[in-house]
Each structure stands twice: as structure tokens, then as C-alpha cells.
Length: 586
Image (cartoon, rainbow, N blue to C red; front, side, top):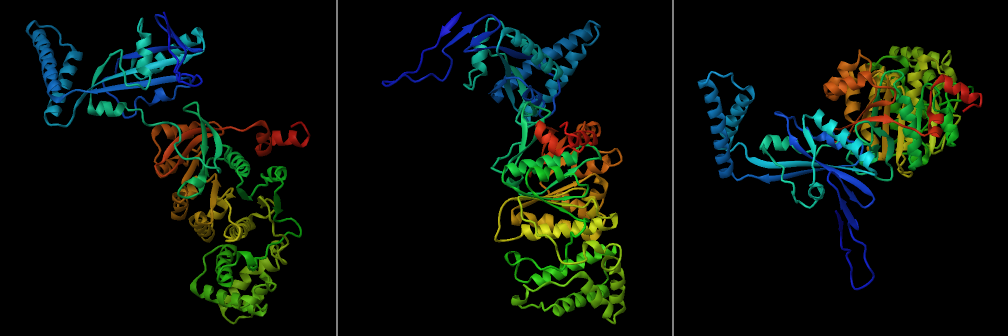
């Protein structure tokens, strides 16, 4: 049977209809326009359900229309029908007992459920509804439709649902699945309030957020056919953490996000401890600063440029020097040491002609060796201890980074500070210095733009209490300057094992968990409140697969990181692929 649908016309030119020109109806399918579809009705349901039990139907990768029709049953009618049903069940049970037949467990369970439901209806704790669920499967050919229907039936069977393809009523089924509120099949089942509430498939495996011009594609959703795109700058704060074991793909994801952030016009600054961002930086024309290389120096006593100064840059610089020197010495400073250091810092600046007067702030800043000399001249024993502690950084083996004025002030859309050639004893100090240089750029009130600051292998800084506190201050203040801090680390236990690390995670709306080590999974599970399934996912995840937790409501989305061939060439860290790239094979 073929039904020709009239077209909508006006007195002017013909206007195309909102639906197909014709619908060809067959016994078990219908042809609508250029596609073919079939409707399945749910005729059997499980006895007990959990919240969101229909959610897997939304994850079907093909085109599937799920329609849920609900009709409330008046309380008087519901009570009368339930009383009659209960009487039939009780009568059947008594008949079995009188004739010494074995009791039917199904009938006995139904009687108990009916008794409980009648009690709740009498107390007003529940109501009854008549509901029907229809699934309309779409395909491009009849063969493809048969395969799709088999897959949908199998998916329904996994939920203990009995899905039957309607016969000679496909037109009524198709109309019932349209958003017209017409239930032409009327294949209903009675639900009480809790069961119906659990049947609502309002939850979704996809992230729900507004995407602006700074949105970044992370990968594919492993639970649906959609992509995972996220805009960190549309959230309450712009920070993120990426936690994973070594080799799980955390740096790959961080580099891919940095590259795609550049596409969106976001300025990117990276602290790179392993020289992994060099090829990416070169490809995009960024500035690459190789700390530890000859003639590359950073003077920690430099005052900010004129455009980046606040009301009192000298005091701010003195406070940062307290943090830096505590990291250099490897221990917190006592009150007496802080007093001696503060006295020496101000004296060193005065000797260079720099005071609280703004006209002196453009003069050449003193060096670290000048501060050490001032400390050594002080008669306070604490000052001499500080001078002795700074000796390796002034005259000893660690002086290369501080032995002279700052040699470079980068200005680019991507700035990478490489720490690979710094000795291990200097990497925490180098990370803190580069963070300070980046922060001065981020907080410049005369150069506002979205910025992303990536701290790779953040555990290097988290090992030192003063460095961890500086990172926390940056995480708290980044939003005010239109910046997002991305903390990347493989040592989840260290990050989650102290209050500062937990505070950094709490100040990061976007949290990405890739494969975790068994030794750290307990802390990760507790910190992020993972379910058993999410815990198992992170223990067995393949490289680049994980869980994205984001937003105020704690949305969760499993994802697989994907990259184009060219992007993969720029962000891969595989030694074999890098060797082939150097040889010109990639």
C-alpha cells in the first residue's frame, strides 16, 4: 500500500512539505522518502529496574527513535483494578493449596508485589501509569534494516526487554514514534511511580555544555557515536588536571589540546621537562627557550616590564624571592631566616638604585650573586646560613642559569620552556622560575586574551611545599586573568596525597583520567568518587582512553583521544616514530 501525502501550498510559489512525499507501507516495514524503517514494540519488561535503565538505548550507534508514551491512571480506577488483580492472584494461590499443587513462584511474587503496591497507593506514596515504549529503526536498505533490527533486539534483550517487530501495523508504529503524542499501537504496560521515574532516559553519555569559540575537540565518545568537545573557558574556572600512569598518553593529549587551542586563537605556554614539545613548537612558529643551554639565563630579581607592573612590583618580587629561595634550599624558611632574607633583598635593590619610587623601577636589576653577597655581609648568623645555601647557585655547579642578566624575553603565540638539560636538582627551581615568567605575562592587564598554561610532569614542583603552594595560588587566580592552568602528572598519589594537591584538583573544573596504576587506583577512586565500572575502565584502559569529568554537575564521559595523521606526527612521543621522523620517513 502506498499513501500519497498532500503538499502544503500557498497562493504564491509552492512550499515544500515538512514530511516525505509518500509513504509505502508493507507488512513489516515502511519506506519513507529515501529510507526504510521498522517499528519494534516492547512487550516484556524486567521485574526490577535501576535509575537510567533505558540509557543504553540512547547509545545505539545507528539511527534509532525511542518513544515513551505515558498515560496516568486515576486513583480510583487504579485501586479498583489492583484489587481485582490481587483477588485473582490470591484465588489462584488458594486453589493450588487446596488441591495440593506446588505453588507457582511467579504468581506468589506477583501477589506480594500487588499487595505492596496496593499499600503504597492507599497511603498516597505512589500512583499508577500506563506506559508504552516503541523503537523505530531507520536504514538505507532492507538488508541493512534487518541487521539493524537484530542489533536493536539484542540490545533490548541485554536490558531484559522483549522487543517485537509489529506486523501489519507499521504505519501506526511509525506515527506513534513521531513527536505527535499519538499512541496508535496502544501496547501499554502498567508502571508505578518509581519504575516510571527510572525509565526516563534523560541521562546521556554525552557532555552537555555550551561551546564557544574556544572549544577544543578531545576525541570520540566510547559510549556513543558522538565526539567529545569541551570549552574550558566556558566553565566556572578554566583549569584542568590530567592524571595517568606512565605511557598512558597524558602528554600526547596535553600536546594535542595545546595544538588545537592554537587553532582557536588561545595563547599557549608550556613547561616541558622532557623536551617533548620542541617539534610542535617549531611547526607552529612558537618561541622555544632551552633552559640549561649555554648563555640561556633567567634573573629572578628582574622587575616586570612597565606594561605588567602593578601598584608595588618591588614588594611582589621580594615575596616571590622568598618562595624561590625556599625551593633552592629544599626546606621551608623559619621566621628568623625570613627576616634576614627580606632585609637582604631590600638592601640589594637599594644598592642597585631601586626603591619604592616608581621612577627607579626601570633601572637594571641586581643579580642573585649580589643578593648572596649582601647576605654574607650581614652579621646575623641566619643570613650567613642563607648565603652558604645559595653558594651552589652563585659560584658553584648550579650557577649557569643565574650567572648574569636575563637573556631572552619571549613574545609569541606559543612559548615553550624546556627543562631537559637542567640537572635534577634544578628542575624544581627551573619550573618555578618559568611559572613566574609565564604568570607575569598572563597577569598583564594591557594584553588580555585567553591563555593556556601547561605544566607537564607537575610532580617535580609538587615535591616541594613552597612550589606546590605557588602552583595552587596560580590555579586560584588564573580565572581572573582569562587563563587556564593544565596540570599534567603521572604521580597521582603525590598530587592527591596532600591538601595542596587536593586543592589544585578542586580548583580544576576539567579533570581527565587516563589509565591508572593499581597502586594509585584507590586514592583516585576515593578522590573522584569512581564507580566500580569506572574504576575497572581506568585499570584496563588502552593508551589514549580514559574518563573526562567536567562541569559543576560532575558530568562524566568516557573518551578515546583521536588525532589526524599530521597532528599525530607533531605530538607523538614514540621513540620508533621519532627515529623514522628524523630519518625522513614520516
